[in-house]
Image (tube, one colour):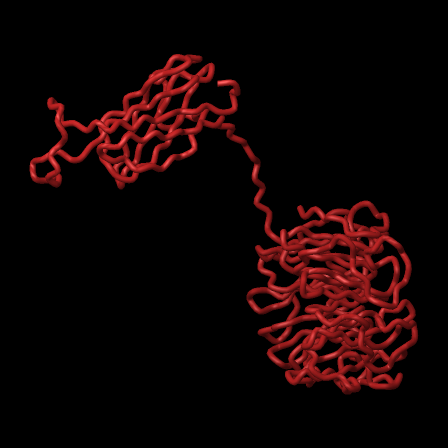
Length: 482
């Protein structure tokens, strides 16, 4: 043998079957009637034995029966022979192991230095079989396994990022009023979240498995006082099946009834009045989904129609004019909607056919129609026909496409292409594939969860909302979840 990496072992399967004490062929009478079972003699011939090997173990399995022998060999010998003994005929599997220590020291738990590739053959009477077994070095590897919960949902705010983990906990990073978290840290007091939502003013809420909602950030936005750094439960009629946060307010769905809390300075609650916010209260609107934006809110009904209320100085309500509404008005010409995403001053809707419509402020090209003109009614985003999810940031928009890629348009520092130039038409985020979740809400950054459960973020990073470097992330960077 010329290489230590492998050693060939020839199994000589002898054809001479015999009975104990006799040299003739065995009786073919079936076992159990006082006659011997068909057997064949097996001998293992070892070619060059690797230096160090002192003991070889061979196991032959036929049916449910396994015969194992442990034999001493001379290290470095050019050949050696091992008598396996009598084995029954039929389909057999041979396994082998070699050890760099004496057979007397080998136990069932001893780690082998060499492991043979299993060989399957058929043992027959009257036929000589030759089987070659290849022994390979056994190199056990010790790996330190850290079982970290997998990210399953993203929620981005103005200067923060949050991710809900599979175990119900939440990690967050970015700017929180008087301080910044440079690396993801757990939110205290939450281990049963089934949804997380982020907004402005460091406000966030989590929908709990028990049906309740807990929020943290600026407490006055939901009817309490001061600021909390840990999750504080708030009272909303339960069960809550969806929540969405805007710049200074939030809304949640109780079955099909909308409840809103926080500030209602633009009539964004859609309850017919301006002001009078604070603690959660029903708005009187019966809808399927709710989306909160800067100071406007849109609701989606079960028929795919969209209705919006609140601030409308840039046409973000989609009603064809710039009039503020305190009760939801229909978005002009929009049907077949399956999802609504609201930015600070613009709105977008995903239709069931994979196309996207956007309207409102368009100073950076975030509507995606090739212009920077304000649009008070929906306009189709150019070139997108396979979207499965849409998200709207402060001045940019992104879609997750059917094949797991992401396309963005709008403010240049948020697009992930590394160029930093505004774009009024969609462009792919280079090098990003296998995306299964995406979010960008009110802020100037975007994050994605990939199929391997890594999290990548890009965009403006002055408050550590992307990662701890505080430097602009022109292209996606990996976020390490603690």
